Image (tube, rainbow, N blue to C red; front, side, top):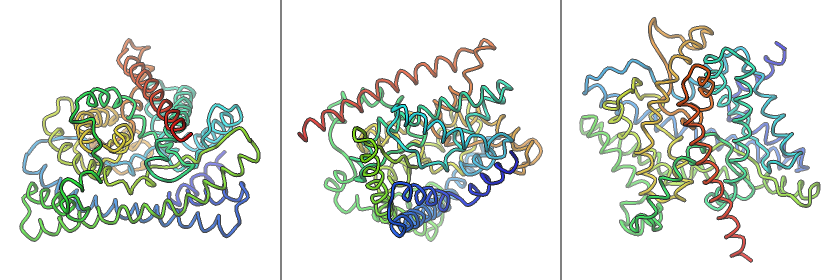
Length: 452
């Protein structure tokens, strides 16, 4: 058992930029791609992941000091440190039973594929830590490893079904055939759906207004580099930087928004051959089926709408952190919140105005859930020494993926203690998930009918 854990930990230690391409190369060879093509696709995907990570780190490094400066001017005390998703991943993998999640995810995927209950082959095995994160909280609430894994298994099933339902919209919006998104961050799209449904009833908000439309209306001011520069300057002013600092932050934000679409093209270059190969292979084996490759979110990184929403959310998060009742987390490492922008992008089909409204409405959830998870993650960090914390210091994340679902799944067993709130939240989320999924299925059928 220890030997298996060592193997799993070794591969995970390679990082997503190496681990995921290895999975893609192996999958390519299984579906009979030429060796050179499989290796080329895998390495190109590694380049894309590395480039996207570099840009996000660059953007985080530019904006976080400005955000910290804004916080210092308020004098408000928020005791929970925001370690971001990377720290949460490190702490999650330190759980003694974490390595068992890896085979569980693979086995469930294979069973559902064989039973024809999913059409998604999940290649995003790097994000197994997201299931561990949920399981850790469930374990500390129930004290049962078995219950923790059962809850994680249910999450795996929902991730695959969500990927199935989203595939048509993902392909239409990304332009990459045969792929979908299996990341749990898309779970937030379900509770966003009824809110977006209401917003669409407002005539002014029920029009096409993506980044391209914005460019048509305001011209050069919607160009990536100009818009990034303007936003950077605004942040610099709010942080009370000097002139040099303001202009530097403006250029840094302009650089990030300009390069994100460039990097995203490498995802398409890497993924199109493997998705075509998987499709051809499965058609030869299962003539009545079309399988999709499930991936992490970065292949969507070329959507300017996502980055506009991300940047918008930074000041919104800071303001809410100051005044939101019940919040105790100081936004820091998780300030670049992809987990709120991507589901908003999906549910609105890229309508920028509705995306910004949804991000504003749902941002408090991230702060509340981040606060709620602090005791579990702090205890695990102190027990395993995965992260060195000062005496009395607490740690969590201000941008936990799929916060509503993660909280509801992990806390649902509190019904045994008479707390029915997590169960109610879970039932509401599942209801939203069903209605949202039906809308995605309906959209696919309508588009197919139109094509015919």
